[in-house]
Length: 106
Image (cartoon, rainbow, N blue to C red; front, side, top):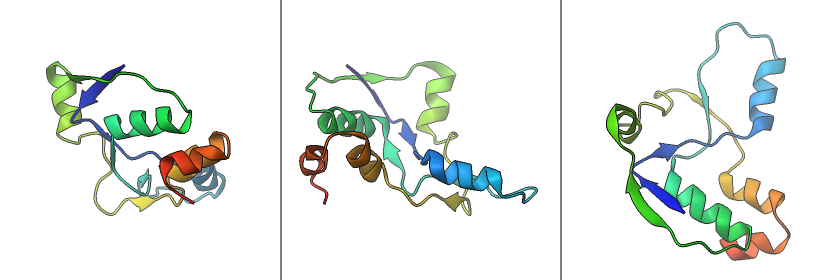
């Protein structure tokens, strides 16, 4: 499985997004997840929670798009609102009960 290095995301829960959308507020700050995570970490945690094992092949995202991701152009600006539900909580809810134990969370 490819593991693109240097790429970071701020996964935000769909319920946090939905809550933002239903409240009419005009122009609002950006909304991002509660933490910045690398794509490699997200992939590894997802496989772990699903009880799957895959070899990870480190790759570098090429070109201008890869450089923009590595520089964090896709991340929320300072002052953005943050969602409340963590990636680990999402995985524990999405996968069977033993996923939390595999991830080392309660």
